[in-house]
Length: 207
Image (cartoon, rainbow, N blue to C red):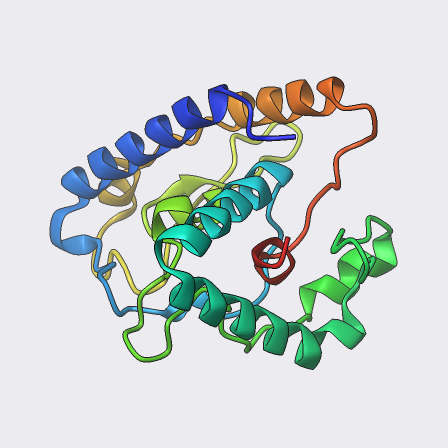
């Protein structure tokens, strides 16, 4: 199955929100090409993210075979090193959903560079198709809220040095979580079998 039609709208909304938040933040947002702090450590990506990366790899195999080969090499090397202790299904790349698996994932490959990161340039080789987590990292975003709590604002620790809470709040980036969840639900309902659930970048690059 390919990406649902609404994924393009999701990406456009998120990218527009990022551009607007960056405009409001100005010099407080220090994200720039070559800054790679957010490119280390494994993180969960959705099936939409994985399909987006797989589509990018398919396109690269025709347009830039050497880059596609290099990305596959890096992803394979990443999994050779970290795959043996992957907290999930190593055949499908699906992350485990048990409490024990989630606890293991908290400590999993925290120092490892993302296989999509070009070590020579410090740039993402799949930037246009990067996961949602990557697209919203940097500006203040509303963290998951508890019961009766609106959720705290979180941002990259390198950004907003010296800014007040009010100044940070004025730069909040809205994230369309509901739209993403609706697309995932729509995608899952269209398949004959359940979607693969959450995975990580290395497995997605090798689909």
